[in-house]
Image 1 (tube, rainbow, N blue to C red):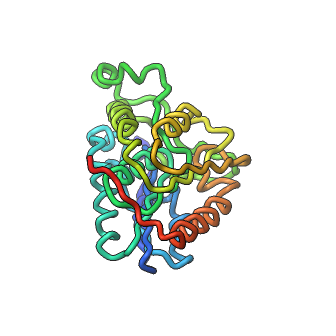
Image 2 (cartoon, rainbow, N blue to C red; image 1 turned 90 degrees about the vertical axis):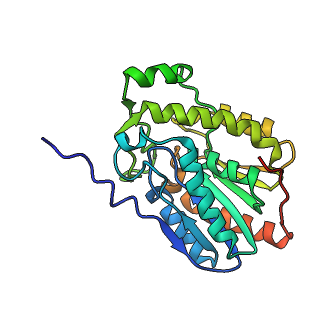
Amino acid sequence: MTAGPDHSAFSSPFSGEGSPTGIVLSHGFTASPHGLRAWAQALAAAGFAVRLPLLPGHGTSWQDLNRTRWQQWHDALDEAYLELDAECDQVFVAGLSMGGTLALRIAATRPVTGVILVNPGLVLDDPRAPWGGVLKLVLKSVAAIGNDILKPGMEEGAYTRTPVAAAHEVNKMFKDTVRLLPRITAPVQVYRSTVDHVVSDSSVAALRRGLTHAPLEVVRLENSYHVATLDNDAELIFQGSIDFIRRVRQAGGEVRHGQA
């Protein structure tokens, strides 16, 4: 019997100490911290305190992910936020794909200074999504969604299957997060790939509609697919997010929010 892939090489969290400005980052669904590690390292090298946790159910097997709930993913990122909030004067939140959804939830319920998103998800376009609660009883997994990267030779360390019960949790979290968007007042920067085979433009449209009290800046990525932090536009994201953080910080960016 052939052993499954070893995800341990991709699963290590990242932590960096730095200035009174902190950044909490979240990887996406079925993925791992590896997909954001270079970004986290660039932020740490710029002098910021950084936390990049491994979300529950990730970094092991898709079967483990099928046994988790979206609240567990949120709690893991919230714990990382609270750790930095105790040490820093200002804290930004950032994330890729579903990690962007989690970052938005933190921004809606905590006093974050700014939000940075890469191809964030808010709408699950799969026609099977509305039936996820039933499908999970008869179907354990479907084809993988990971490694949507234009640059050759890159690997994000995602699961080789997409767990259906966990995908149903994603759909529930997306819907619940959309209702929280009007509570966000922190400035939001979004990096959006022109070609993305995982998250459609419906998610960005939902973000635009929901951010009724927050300034939104969208940066187009012309040479990357979904996992843009490992793709050809990675350096643009790294430097652009550093510039955004410095710009918001210099503007005195303390942020006020509504509690959930």
